[in-house]
Image 1 (cartoon, rainbow, N blue to C red):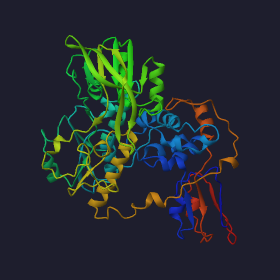
Image 2 (image 1 turned 30 degrees about the vertical axis):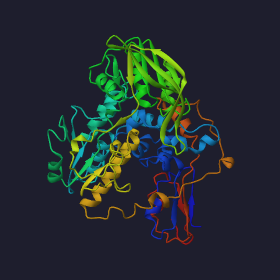
Image 3 (image 1 turned 135 degrees about the vertical axis):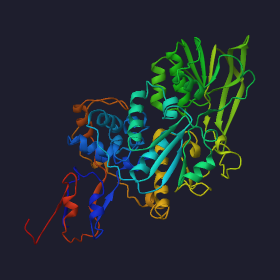
Length: 516
């Protein structure tokens, strides 16, 4: 074989495969990258961090990503769940390494091309909208974001507490997007200040990327009493400086992330006895495990496996919540259909009740005759590959399509919509090369039992923790380098671009007849 590839240096970046004229080089994708909704090459920046090349590592974190530092705080890090090292001891702290790079490595200048494409309107300044604008601008298109709020960020600003995502970090990254030339038309509600049909007329394409801002109602008697709030509304008012009064005894209904965050905020606002009540068991709670653990550490009480029956008044205010045991949450088909045991009930005193049982996007701005195909009545049906709606030139992604999702999932939708629009504006097929891309990708399956493990690494690092350079190097050295390049045919023209352009000099070409 003419190629000698040092797998300890290989980034599995695919540059060599792209340069090979004979299609002789293939790349096995690392599981961490395969798990990332944005397709970020985690192995590349982890390996470069281990090699003390932080600025180059930051390029793999941030060059195609609108909000890299934000993700270092709030990403759900599916890469760590997929990390092969976890089969030996514990997964790499990939999100912590991302934060190390975004906080310490010198910022990178982006190569912004001239605007030679189309004009795109984006409705919603949350993670999906910001990523769509970022990707479109880097592809040479003009982008304008419309949002009814006075500041960009969407649910990242209004739904994620600042102790989890500092507002200075979010503001810095939004400014980075705006600095590309993205027009921010804030304080403009589509359907009121500007009409949806006008956007379709004045722009070459439209991206709908509105977040799930509406709280689901409980539809229970007594829901109109004073002292009752809804999860997203409560968080929104708090972040807009209109914090509602909170009593000492707080009950939060719901088991998701919004419920947990609302409980933590209520605790910080003076709630002495804050109790979270959810239908699910502790193991079934939809909230991320680390958020639930933080809530417990801060004194939040969990009452799992219970659901509300009545809200009981104390005058014109909420006085207590009557709950009953939940026998099961799902039916035999997996559909949400909770069953209750009325023989087991409790009364929980409460002078504040926060209902956080779900969220949905507000689609009213589209109008009744917009011509969209609704999926559940609260989300839009789109082509899952291209995110195209039934209306020509209109694409949708994020919470408007999936319902409430994570920041990284919403950003991936914005990225996908941007690629579709770039193809459409430039007259390319929207589906070519995308239909089987994920199925065709070869994902490495390392033999962890045969892995050589020399670096024990530092003690376990918390998700998103800020670590120093020494800990970062030691943690990065724990990577098993699952992804790698390899020869497919064993044929070579010895033209050398694969070797010359390898960013880590991991590839060497054996030249039997030439002298270097």
